Length: 156
Image 1 (tube, rainbow, N blue to C red):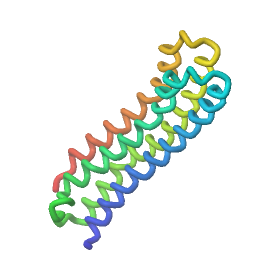
Image 2 (cartoon, helix red, strand yellow):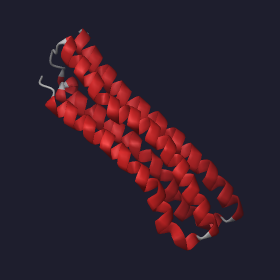
Image 3 (cartoon, one colour):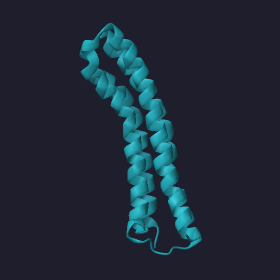
């Protein structure tokens, strides 16, 4: 495999792995909080499921960023040859969605846990509990958007 393609695929790995690991970590944080609440009130499962799922979106964003790179280099159709400089550009373009996704998913898990504790005490405040971690989501979306814009600007 040529160096340019290898560097572009390293970008795919950065986007998918970091955002995915962050999502798993964030969901685990929210899941721990939900597990504690559910031991006291199993009827709240439906409300808490939404809160646990929120940090998982970054994993999807990372997958989208990685998939966009693979589509741009036609990796699934045999991969077009690209220079090492272009491959490096794809690697750098993957950093926003991968790294912002990693960090924001963890912090969104913590914010979701806070929302879960709010629901435990005041189940009628579900809307407010969702808004808290949704604020963190904004930065994951910005990371994805930055990566998409950079990937779109790379000529192959």
